[in-house]
Image (cartoon, rainbow, N blue to C red; front, side, top):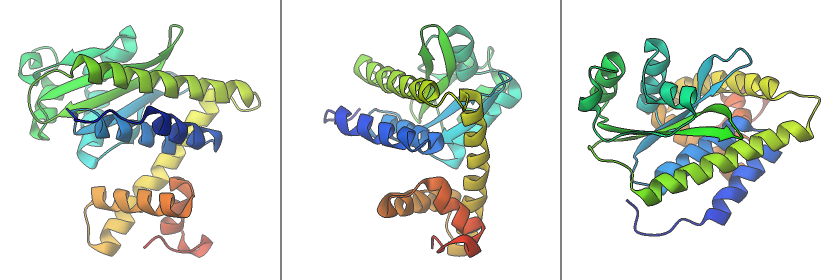
Length: 237
């Protein structure tokens, strides 16, 4: 639990700026990062549905958070899937209590060092785009204040994504999400290449990419593309 109240205006402005630039990946990484920065959670990730309704991990704060999100999708069980299906938040104060309901997910999450999970739907007027999942290393629920903040941020991001879809009618939301998925592939490739080049972990490589993007005012995808294809620009190193 953080001691200070977050600056919601600056958080919303950052999210809006990313979405105006049609950079959904950047916006959703900013969203999950803001949730971790301003709540008791330590890691998080976001899954979104593609045009066929198949869920994909689109943003995460770390490799282990992404691993746990991918585990949910592979095992077809877990709080994010229940959250998307029902359109309601799912609170799991202690994963030990879910070993029978979600045996594979709970085991993998605990192996990665997580003991509590909170999943929040990204929804608007009955339409659920995906879910935001937050993880903590110790048992216990999110406070009412933290849960309300996370839902507010998720609602704002969902509204912004759908508004951009309405503005750019020539590009359906499903096409934007597909571009976001393609962008994530490039970012993952860049993380691996940069981790090898700098001798750092993938999480440290991702932090490096984010700092480079912010310091130069560019999209994280563009910085990542330069790492993967350095002939197209200056290298992010």
